[in-house]
Image 1 (spheres, helix red, strand yellow):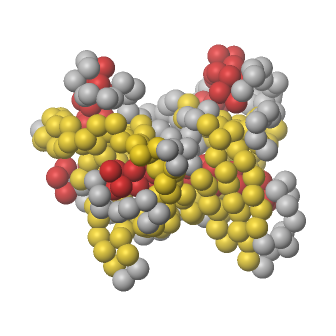
Image 2: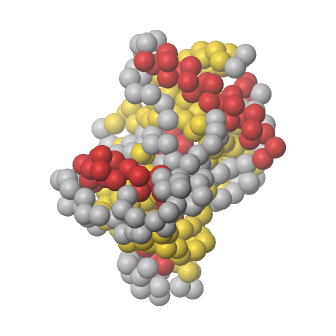
Image 3: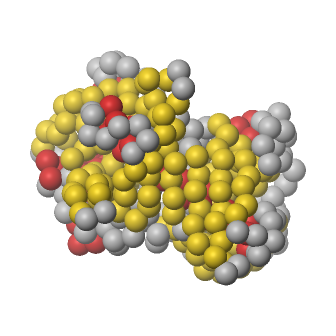
Length: 331
């Protein structure tokens, strides 16, 4: 990263989880697709990722979005994580939609609904922005297809053995019942959940790499702990996604909710076309609908509804004598 460069961003949070959309300062990227330009960014400008997401300007849970042109959709974007690049990110897609509305790029504020397509590395998603009184009231994204690839996989780690399902929802997940893992789906249970989740993730990935999980060939990105309850409005999946030993998703997780929908359909708990709510440990909900895909009995198309809120606009700079130009993370 060149000294004295300024990077402009607009920050938001989606149900508690942050999104940092880069609005200026990224060099020209090369490639025929968003995925190719993501790879170019990773190869030549990865220090920009750590500069923006790591301490002292960010933290382990910060997620970044880099906008780029698309030849097949209205917009293109790829997602920066504190440790890796993401194929898709649901909460950040919601944050991006609210940011684009804030910038006046997706229609006049008096328009009740705006629609746009978004090319991400995982594919093309369609996004709907609903407004009330000129303010965004909801964002819906039609995600890439979600599917279950392995069920009832016994994983032993951290002194316990649990059953996990391996599911794609735009990223790869190991879905584990919270009660079986001794996880309390409340803020007080986060530290324990991160420790157990990181151990389960490492063990499950070792099993996948060794060919011990039929159907699973890619490593999982996260462990999703879940519990199901019924209330007056229907089924609720309370859940907590653990990405690393020091990182969890504050939101109900868009791609995680997509994976959860696919699991519930595969297990016959819900049918295609049905809607549930996914709830984070802060008691904020997404609405999630499992839409059928014609000719695809093995997958559903998740429709996820949530809302983000702008938290600030920033210009991040690098002083010539900064001793930590790339930022840092402590586990």
